[in-house]
Length: 375
Image (cartoon, rainbow, N blue to C red; front, side, top):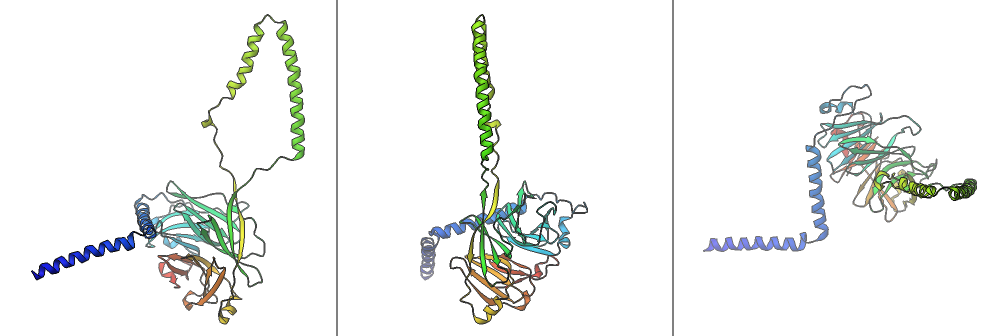
């Protein structure tokens, strides 16, 4: 009897606990969205990892790359971004190579060689960000925006665009993405000043240029000439019709209907061109450093930032020369800093993985041991 009482009491407690847990926890809409988002990421990672890998593009020497042990060719790392959406590392090197590496860091999934020819030649990469599962943006020190997109399982580069609105005094670095406003943003340190800014850039459609006044006048004159010609033609036609046997009237009607029939083309045959766009500087947000301690303030005056990481509404920037990790609050427009360990000295960048910030301390080779946590 006593054992049955304990059993029934335990079962009742479990049932009541499950009900209360659902009522107070899982009934919250925000928690439900987070759970759904987590399962969605798991599905994406599973489908991405189980999908058949596309053939890897040839290297500069036109030799095929063995994706199973090609990690040794990833050297002189410039930027690293870890995507928890696809569970992979995205890497840019100083040789303008783009790699996708598996989440365990043991396999190269694909390689893309960026061309360094033409007017928009590549400079040092200063930031990279994946904004969608198949869309990656990267930016160079000279303000060139590179778009890397995956189509049919293969990465490819789209036409580069120069960010308009930057000035020669700007010293930009890092790249982030504001999903609410659909804008990219970078950090900027004005030359020879201690001022630090957030630069927001957005993509805008290029409006077609209006015709010049001279062109309008010429088109008007040509229209007048055409009208005069049409009038004279109509008079001649009328005279010919009056002197004909009556057959010309049917011919005139057929001629009037013919142009209309020729102009009847299906709408599907006319392909709409995508509007041309450009990336432009949208706004500058100055950051206040008034809340810093005196020691951090002195180091901030010699600030040389690397990396840009977003986490929980904050932006993190590393100064590995002064061994300071700076935290930016975009809403309040403030920046503060704290000392980090000497292990991150001479780091070239940062990235976020599993909500933990890592610094790139050995860019010569791709190795998970070369990434050090700065949290």
